[in-house]
Length: 295
Image (tube, rainbow, N blue to C red; front, top):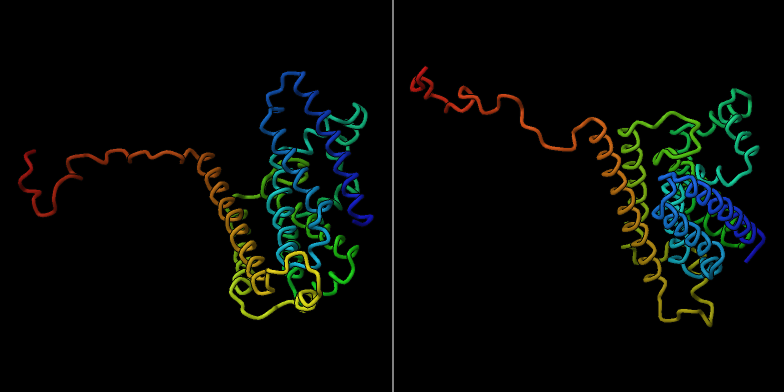
């Protein structure tokens, strides 16, 4: 465990206190927005994030590729989307003192230089491209070896990956803070499809490769007294590739379905409705037998 991991733990404690305080305030006011389902999702998000940074995964990632992949899956595919689904920002605002809540609201409605700067650097397609670039770099052999050589540096890179995922899911899920107009569902679905194809292009070769692809892990598996001596480097690599493949496909493809379903519901297309006049006599006549129909 390093200083960055402890900092993440401190942030999680602060976020949890603010969320619980805000949730209880909204609950006392009888706001249906503060329900047990959102609270459960938030607790899940905090627990998974804590497991990523404060559990043995944070040192096992230097010995096992599958542990490093598990960190990515747990943080970027499960925890961060759960934070936005639980509406963490909106509920945490109510955990702040009244003056703090009003100050945040004024800043979000302002047109100052900082507000415009944050808006410009977090535009949807910039966030999407940033996540793809950071994701690809995370699984590059040379970059991975450089990061894994220092535990603090690797934790910092994991935070960068998490921030990139946070910007991505912020636009895809659409909960607060609301600094941008809602991303078009069609564009969101296209973005997820691009990310899914990128994920597959990395996961499938790793899952089926019969040669070690990462020099760092090839060296790590020669060390004596490993925690899991029965696990070979190829099995570990295949397990990691399979995690990226299965978890990524499950999350990204299901998200595409949910986004398109939301689009259909918005336009009243969530149920089958027959076209008007579909059963008129003229439509039911078999071609060539029109002369037998009595007018």
